[in-house]
Image (cartoon, rainbow, N blue to C red; front, side, top):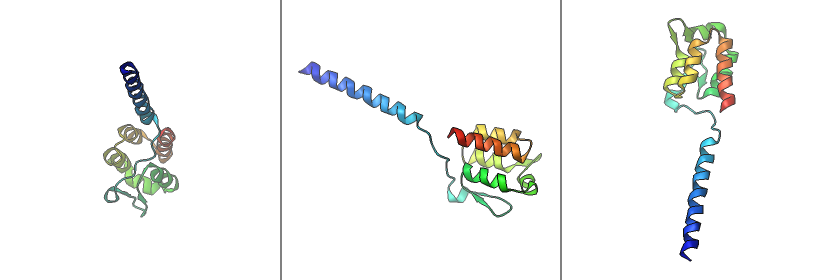
Length: 113
């Protein structure tokens, strides 16, 4: 009888380890910024997550993009790094040479989520 209980406990432990691994592999959606940390675009748009950023970048004028991303600063990269906690995407946004490159980087990240 004791062997049976021990075997059952062993199976339960193995089963719980498997379910933990499965949970870690599940995809996550875009992280939403807290209301006080949303990104306010100079054109009035308010962004809460990467999906909002991709949509805003696609429809944004070159002038509005240049206001936020230029040789002196990159507000998009800073927001992604500091608020959304995605340093890899933030680095890609710094390296983006154009608005089109920035859109491509954000959309690629969204596909991986």
